[in-house]
Length: 444
Image (cartoon, rainbow, N blue to C red; front, top):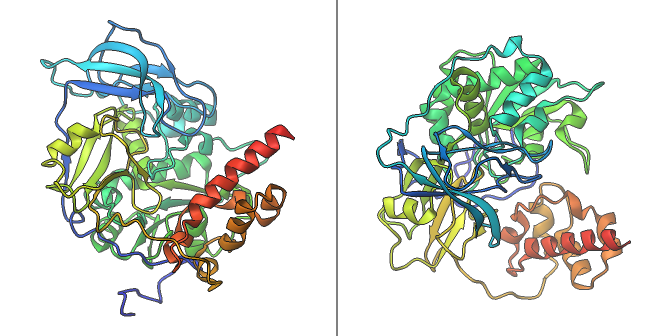
C-alpha cells in the first residue's frame, strides 16, 4: 500500500488522478427520506435526448407514480408525478442548466399519505425484448450516475449485435459523493436483482460489479448475497467510474476511439439504475425519487437523502440545516464534473447525484499561469488525449484540426485541469472547442 492508501495490486485503468476523497462526512450516514414539501417542479428535459411531452394540464389531479409526460421520441423517457396533488401549471421554470425550460408544476396534497401504490411484479423472462425496452422507457429510467442517458436505449440490442458482458458501476469516484455507496450498503439485494434482470434480458455470458476499495462495507454487503455476479474491488482513482475506464479496469478491454461499449459487446449501468430497475419490475414503481448526497463544508448537516424528483434545492438544503454563512458556491454533482448553480430555486432532477456546498477554501479561484509544457495533463488524461495541444488549437481557432486530435472523444472528466500546475482551465477550453466544432460542422 502506498502513502495515499492505494492498493497497487488491485485492478485499475491507466493514467487518471487522485483527488482527495472528502467522503468522511456522509459515507457512514444511512439514507433518510426527504420530507414532502408544498410544490414540485418537473422539467420536461431531465435526460440526454428529446424532452418528454406533457400529458397533463393545469387543474388536473394526479397520483404519485402516475404518468405526467410521455417520451418525446425513442431517445427520451416518461416522467411521473413524484407526489399526489394538483397540477398548478405547465410553463417555463428555471432549470439547473441556467435556462428557463418547460416544466410541470405540482402542488402536493397535504392530506394524502403520499404512498406509492405498488403493482404486481412483472416476470421479466416472459417479456419479449421489445416489451422489456418499452417497460423501461415508460418507467422513466435513466442512468443515475450523473449522465442521465435513457436506460432503455442501452437495453435495445440491434439485430446482428449481442452483449457478451454486463458491467455494473459502483465506483462513485467523484469526491464528496456517497449516494451510490449507501445504496449498495443498504439495498444490495436491489442492486444485484437489477443486474440479474439486465443480464437475463440481454443474454450476457457474465456480469461484474466494480466497487472502489474505499467502500469496504458495500463490497461486503454485495458479496454476502452469494450471487454469481462477480464483485471486483478496484483501486481508488478518478475517473474510474467512466464506462470506458471501468471496462479497462475490470476486463482489460478497450472501447475504440469514438465508439461505445456496445462495439465490443459490453453493457455498462450504474448501481442506482439497476436498483431502480428492480423496483420497476418487482414492485411496479417508476422513477419518482432518487438518493442525493448533500454535503460540503458550507452546509450545516450533511446527509444522504432519498428525494422526490422536482423537490426545490432550497428545501433540501433547509432540511439539512441550511447553508452556513461561509458558503461560496453550490454545485450539482461532484467537484470534478458538477455544475455550479446560480440559484437554489431549481429542482432535483433524475441525474442529480449530489448537492455540494463549498466555502471559499474549497471553491478556490486560481490565477492562471502560462503552460510550462510539463506534460501532466497527458499523464492525467484517461483517453490519452493531448489537452494542452487541443487547448492551443481552440485558442487559435484552428477548428479544422480539432477533430483530427479526437476532441469529441473527451468526456470532460476534468482530470487534466486538476493536474495542471499552471491552473489552466483546460476542460473549459475543450468544451468551447466542442461547441466550435459542432458549429463549424453545421455550417459546412
